[in-house]
Amino acid sequence: MTPMLDAVVVGAGPNGLTAAVELARRGHSVAVFEARETVGGGARTEELTLPGFRHDPCSAVHPLGIGSPAFAGMPLDRYGLEWLHPELPMAHPFDDGTAAVLAHSVARTAASFGPRDAGAYRRLITPFLGRWDTLVRDFMSLPLTALPRDPVGLARFGAVGLLPYTALMRRFHDDRARALLAGLVAHVIAPLSGPGTSGVGLLFALAAHEKGWPLPRGGSQSISDALTAYLRDLGGEVTTGYEVKRLDELPPARAYLFDTSPTALARIAGLGRAYERYRYGAAAFKIDYALDGPVPWTAPEPRVAGTVQIGPGSRDIATALRAATGGSAPETPFLITAQPSLVDPGRAPAGRHVFWAYGHVPHGWRGDLTDAVERQIERFAPGFRDRVLARATAGPPQLAAGNANYVGGDIACGAASGLQLLLRPRPTLFPYATRHPAVFLCSAAAWPGPGVHGMSGHNAAKAVWRALRKGDRR
Image 1 (cartoon, rainbow, N blue to C red):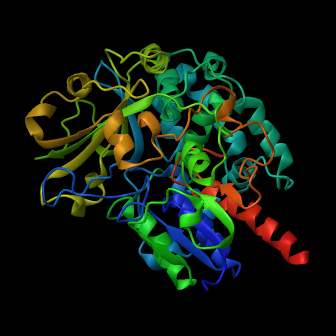
Image 2: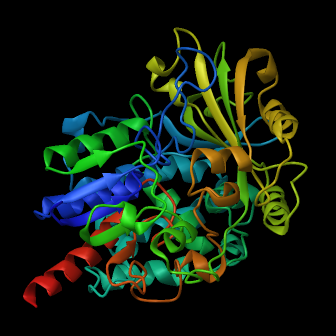
Image 3: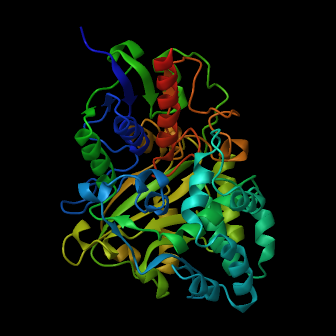
């Protein structure tokens, strides 16, 4: 007879691996099952274009990874995870050949917005400086029943963060600050007028000043590999190439955690229409490039930035988001781009570079955004196309095929807009539990949502640990 495990995790993305590690650290027996042949989920690295060019098919830059309370409590550096910091975390170029920046320094960032908005930005950010560890732990652990460590700081953050970004942008006179912060909000593919969107922009900006926007040496796969190695050292088991279609295909366990979409969880665990009201959102259209040299940006700041936002104005960004979330592909997309080989030359052959870009498109869209994406890049980097050696494109169907959690190409594993930005996957204080007492959700579909930070898995593991402890008492 197969011995009963304490926990089985379905899905070896960062959240599933984090949940498994947290339970294994507490002495529980844990096994992880992953459908693909390698671990990683949204944190993988592959040769997508040409030999020797190592790309991240999904996430590339990780401000919430280096700043994650979950990862901070693990010795992942012992397992090969090394964070590399570009000179500038992020740059946002404009048509006049200049750029605003999100720098490690608040002063440098504020100065890039111009004299009329420098003071407004400093006043926005300064109250939260030096509080990252406590603030983010409180914020990302909600809505659990644990009391916040800094309730005053959390309330102050909430007073600003719960506002729609369209309200926050009124603090600024000029569009340089408005556009850069609007781009930060757009990382969760949410309309700028939605509740809580100010908090998204504020969190990403604060992360740059407190922790940076680093890339892991070797690519995002390094995060997943470090988590896996740590888990195995703790006695956990990881099985890849094992697609789970029914709960009874898994070993007997006291608890089952799903690092999957709610749709997949309901199907596998037999929960019927439990998540029928859960909304999936707009999608991404992503292109990975192999280049024969660095991107020829006109402005100097993007040449040393790990991430470059291409808008350029707040109205342009709002228009692109409205189009994608409203069901039509934007003619002029807002782009988020990353330049991993600027700080990690080993990601490409000598003198060559990898480059990563995506724009937003409607859920399940089947068109080709390549030309629109490259016209936008050329707008701020004339001659870009001449440096392209190869490209790998992935629209919503390809993204969904590569990662089952990206339903319809939604890389956030569910719309991060409206109340679902704050209450995931449904309005409850216990978002990880399901109506099956032994089944739990630990993916980005549960609070605190998308990003390679492991906190959904961390929080779900705590819920499982409490349930197992309660069962032991009985």
